[in-house]
Length: 205
Image (tube, rainbow, N blue to C red; front, side):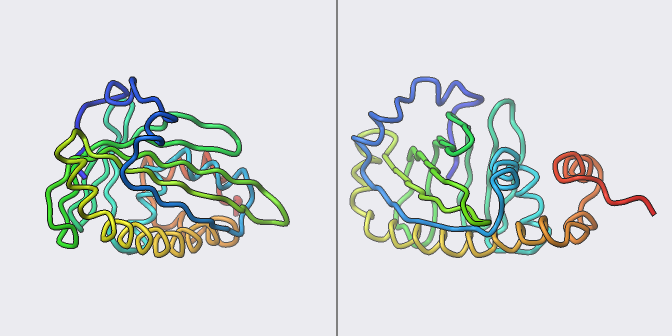
């Protein structure tokens, strides 16, 4: 997706509840990750660092994340490019809003769309159990019609992408918790400083 606007301005007028009611496509599923609430929230609150680890681990698709003002610009090698901003954040919930275009071989249209991601989760018995809801709506009436026309195909793509991404997310989180020197050795400069600040420095020899 290539997301229009800059900073929070493109999300300032978003009413999440109204967006959900009028969304053209919605997808919901559950997930679980063997981690604690602190580590999970640090990941959710530091997407650029996590995106860098994703890239260094060689997972697919390759996500490139860069900070642009108060939002994050995301691009991957399947043709999705865009901007993402956090609109709500608490210990057990994160809401992200994004706006942009879908340009992918599996979706036979160039679609300007808005997306809301809602993560709700709880910690219990050494793991995070949560639900994600994804809502998609065209940028105006014509793109919204295109979203509706390819909705079945779009849902298949969302489901496949989320399942695969979560499997790889779990691998990174496992290493952060159990073998932090592995991701630490991959990082340099500011990203290494941020990792050590969030997850602790290596013990002094």
